[in-house]
Image (cartoon, rainbow, N blue to C red):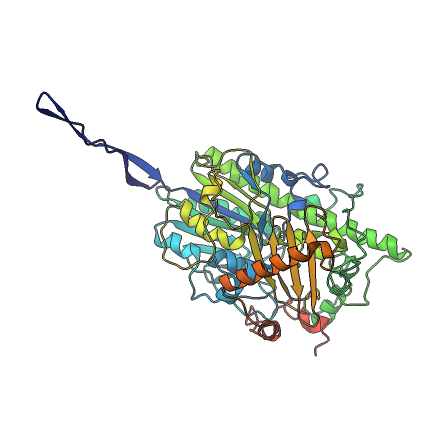
Length: 545
């Protein structure tokens, strides 16, 4: 492991004392200490949410525990209030890589959002430039090839979403079809690099990003029937009636009625090809198409769809947890644990039947709240919990700070290294500006912006409606009571709107609503140049020829 030497001035005690006309000099004392640059393993699972991690508690913690993920929290710091600035896959990844909001990094949305601008700075480039060995395995989902990695191997099919089984990867610029289950395979590649691909005398920064548990939630064979005889519990808001939120939460295409035949694991008829194959598989994803077994009532079928979904989702998480255990065991067995920073997170949160939803996108808690934990024995006290507001634009400056890498790059995010040390700065910003732009495909969630503080969520839905919402997170943590018109909160609304306006100016995104709508309407292009067997789904769901 490469080490850097730093001179630390322990004490400067030079003074002169007069005694019997003699001068007595106390010499400066200097100590030389070694700073060993840490290894970093950044693990991000796609659509993994806090409700699915037993360290966060919740209704699944005893039925579907995550012992290896929990170990990171137990031996490090568990964060309760890490938030996503734009809760959708590609834009969140862009914000993490650049330390900047969508309006600066240029990546606003998944659908018709184009490709990530690979000419801009990303934090892995800084690590590589500073002598770190860098690698990327698993999901990338940004269109352009990664920069700043010595080696990479990422999912390169289905619009870079990747497939669970026998997936195609881009391996350092060449497409390779692999046989097996994606979660296991991506870990295999990472483990092989750790064991044989890297040099042992230099620090490394490895990014391991799982496809799982993203839709269509296909478990490993061994876990397909894991909870076959169990009825999973239902979230408290499963039967949300969206009262007071009819035009926002009540007008989406991500309720239990929008699962497709593929989601529900219906057996596909033989000999279907091309568009007919896609039409059959994605039946159910359009309004008016409801998938259910014959003979079931509507309510029975709704519960059946939830049970199918949640069991498949949690089984995918089970494989993620297993594979994280492989990484942790390798570090222990090879004496790397003490000097390796482990980060575990997701690209945003996700709905597991909460509010009757699946997917993400809203400023509501389940979608913006990211699982986040850091294990670093040299710095982070084991078993600690943090409740400061931190956002995904803060990841890049923090990782660089932990590695003692100086950068002149402008980032809107701030390092929270001192928070990891147990000290929250007195001026730390305990509020987040949020903005979601994509509409109407997928899931018909109205574009909106807002502010999330430790106590309140205020949001403005603006595309073809003009609706404000306010939630008191202390009194209404489930966010079912929109109190925007409650006179008791008039001053709160006024203050939050002022704070929101200031944050929009701070982050250089205080545009007009017309400008925001233009971003939603603009076709920035496709994430891939060549369509494959998954990238034409939009044509079917939007009735295009």
